[in-house]
Image (tube, rainbow, N blue to C red; front, side, top):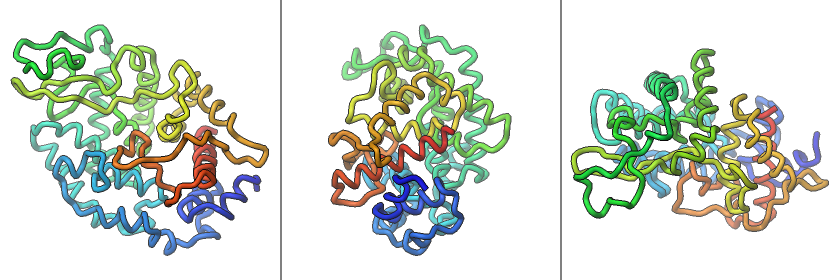
Length: 346
């Protein structure tokens, strides 16, 4: 056993030890932590209690603790999956919401459907019927978009009916690339998360093509981070997200970007089109450059501090080590995350 793995199993928190044994060592039954110990871990209990079934917009998408996307993300980080704790009943209202979205044309329906699908996939629900149906339909639509994708027509001039508060504030996404039911016709971070749950060869192949599109200069350099402004109805405009603009596209990432870099790379490592990309290889080498003789990832002290309120998908909720998040704890967490990236990328 590598020295860094021995240190993690001796010093790290229960969630890290659980994931090291399950995901890195392949043990079906971990030896240093029990399923019961994990299920009563304070951060696990807190997030499970926050799964109240409230499907109002701000309770699904926001930077606060109670937002569905943050709850699922943190539970994923903590090692919680559908077979570990009884999540089916807790997630039932969200799947019902996903079913209702498909029957309506409500504003942001497509975005919320992708958010619910991506978030629940992180917990092992990629094959849930409504999730699978949305992800496959969304993927087919994205493939159609990619065939005619032209960065030169992605943005248009501000419409004449745009209120003064919006004019010149952001770039206006071409209305032909957005509708309330399907969402924006470009890959988002929640789409990327949902693709890790794909099981059939055809869908995986489509996802690989979309990952290649994301990691293209047309997407990374010619599309604005966060996409821009969208028109939902006459005189109704919103700022649209979440694009997948990666840290360190041209130069090494800044130290404070390490959290979101590790978050993205953990997902990208599952896709060959990402693993073989120069950006991924360069950033993997950059992360590995912090590894010491003991195998630990001695990150800069400015890194992986975490923050709240913040968005899990943006790397703001690094949740594997509880407070106080000392430098040693952050080193242990960075070591685990780097080993996970290497494992998926091997």
